[in-house]
Length: 253
Figure 1 (cartoon, rainbow, N blue to C red):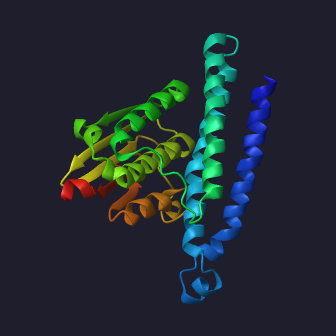
Figure 2 (figure 1 turned 60 degrees about the horizontal axis):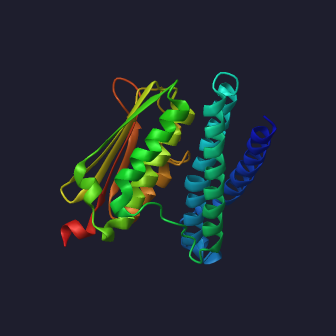
């Protein structure tokens, strides 16, 4: 499958370029001292740019790679399904191009937010369904979205987007690192907050990786920017869990 191999190769090359850029910028952007801010007055915008590259571009490339692998497995046993997966890859790459353009053209380093607040429920269900279609033979993901999540006010677009990217990053980590057989997503509205919990039954994360890196800090920062919180850590008796709550402005007004 020449086209799939070429896509996987080019995607991998681009991913490595992004990773190298992030690694080179880590020391400067993680320095919170006043002198660092003087040396880099646009530091906050660069931090957001780094986060968007990791969360949006990085997770999209992971999805593309998994879809190509699934299509390769199905090429002989189910050619029709393999063709459909490749069509999905084509749509995903076109969307990825738009995301990269959005990141590059944003003046303040903030790219497209993702789904609107009112669309967070549909977006989460669709994402989980697509993941199950590609990796359902090795990990099963369930999604429980409370009815009130589908009725959020459009003014809560930012809260919905933050929760969407937290769910996406959490599930990407499940697929990449956990070796889990089961993962669950729960999105609810509680006490004026949009709440989410993602957990799995996998091997978890090494302790040194829960403090920074792997997109974990990005999830914490997204919730914190909206006045909320996000906690990541081991789940008993095994696995990993991500919990977050983001205030809903319209709900409180």
